[in-house]
Amino acid sequence: MKVLTVDLAARFSAATVMNSSFKILEEFDSWGKSSFDFVNAVINAAVKHRVDIIVFEDVPYGLSKQFMIKPVLRLQGVFIHALGLADLIEKTVFLNPATWQRTFEGVYGKKAAGALAAAQLLGYNPPDMLAIHADEIPAKGKERTKMREQLKKAATDYVDSFLMARWALTHSSRDEMLEKSGIQAISI
Image (tube, rainbow, N blue to C red; front, side, top):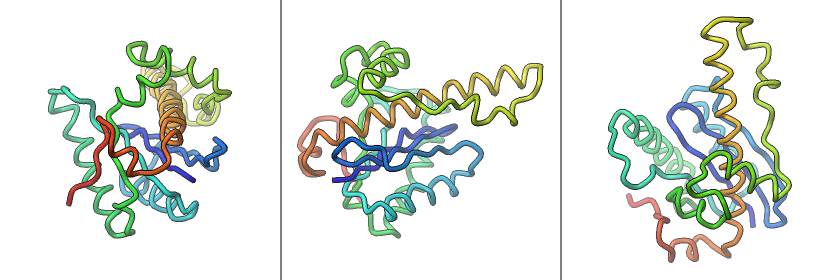
């Protein structure tokens, strides 16, 4: 079985394709891409690797700040349209963050530090985003600080996508996932 997981956010997203041996086949992100380019990258990866299940991290339950959720919901809509055109809707689920986070000790409630520790216990370290994008970082000033913080945050999205893939591969099928709380199919 192969899964594609996407830690989805309006500003930065990371994706992982993993097989049932827990081997990462591909990982990529949205850095420097338009929303449409990232959507295309996800669809292309799903087709290229012939994934069995696509898992998007959903907007957490109880989030009430519209300025935070509206951009993500719009992006979800773009993804749903593209998934429909690629005939991938029946392979796709949306996953409540708490659902996967609670399956890894120390992740739920400890956020990025807990997730990184859990991923490292499984032998994973995220890409060094600061090194990868070193030539884009200004030499000094507020923009330098801002970009460095964004890149550090981006590494945490890789960790989440990795852990989501590990979580997904504990299930034998999409149907099995859908029997659990916190997982939703796309209803069109």
